[in-house]
Length: 335
Length: 117
Length: 145
Image (cartoon, rainbow over all chains, first blue to last red; front, side, top):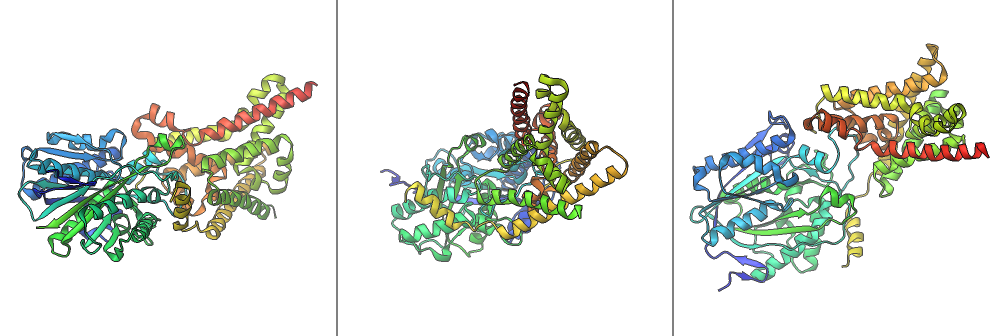
């Protein structure tokens, strides 16, 4: 019997998320979710020589905390699925080098965390692995110099611009330990509605999230009350308002059961982040830091995480291409 | 009086740039290029010097003034050296600002480091 | 919803730039930088420099001040409010040269600092100088006719 129905993969063997680990920067720690992160780096350079090295160290530390929490050795881990926003994912490559764990490098832009969870869940469900780690990171400073301008350049941000989150999140997916199962995943397709403004990524990615979420609810034949919380990755204020409106038009009225990590991680007004947070680390740290802890505390039982990614590069932007989006949904439920 | 004129003319040139940023799809780099080229054109027609006479630094400090310096430099160099002046005039006249930016940039990069925002 | 409709729809969701506030600060701070320039101009001419030299010295001083502000990480804080007010004056040009110089130090002094210095400000020089050469050719042709 096929495990896939429509676009959704049903994981009958119930791979579990055993534990999560999160690490965040100073600005993130000053936000509303600041107290939930396992570790805060007060110096953005993390005592390293470059922003890129700091990002690698952040990811290395997130995996370190995860191994410590789960009391597992490197050799217990079958695979690690990881990625970041830097060119050729060097943040992850250098960050995970010393662990000597078989590694799959992913690039799904900011959707990478859910992409990693999807692949981890399938690897475990298929019996190919016992313990798998999904990890991602992003760093404001390394992203800024790669995608936008030097940090000291005097530019003005537009109201729809988003602030790249400095954070890393890691999750351990196991075959038979833990109380929270990944029950279904809906990998998204690439959706492009022709948005070209790199300062409005939320609007560029929102159609992908809408597409994936509608497919997920249809394939599972569940209604809007099924999940305690549906949370998208980094759509921010603009993108998330588009998603909730479009879902309503499609008959899914989630109301305050729906929110977005990019909206939650910062105090939008006080922290001057315009449309909210973005970056791989946004969804990863909010899920690993905040949501999973709320699940462990028993405040949330069924959560759908849908990380969204903007699949552009500086080259494609300069050449005038539009910004395609992708969104992967992962259902996590208490068992 | 000159200070008020410098303030108003300089401020207005900047405010026009702000309108271009907020109301058009022009990126800051394109706006700066337009300003310089506009300054060069107005400089060749001798119009911009009149604005500098009126507003002093209010007209010379914005990048249109930089374009005007290029144009005047070329005009003077042609008068002095003929044909080669076409190529040498612009950079010669603007060498002060460009040279300073390069040198101070290098110095700043030796001592400075970009800071976390 | 086709792409065109979606673009319009998405645009409605974006709160517009605070035009009034932006214009005010651009005018104010841009104007103040020019007023400072005027003060420098007067100072140099008071010290007895020739008019043309005064303009050059003013540019150099403003470039220095901008490089200093950029180096200590303050120019971008001002630019957040000033927008075009710190972009259009020559201090903005200096900031565009100095900020990548500092940023790409990690890639070394030759291929990092040296090669990236004109990453943002390069177009200004490329098009400014080219425009002046085109103007020069026209002026020259007219003069020999």
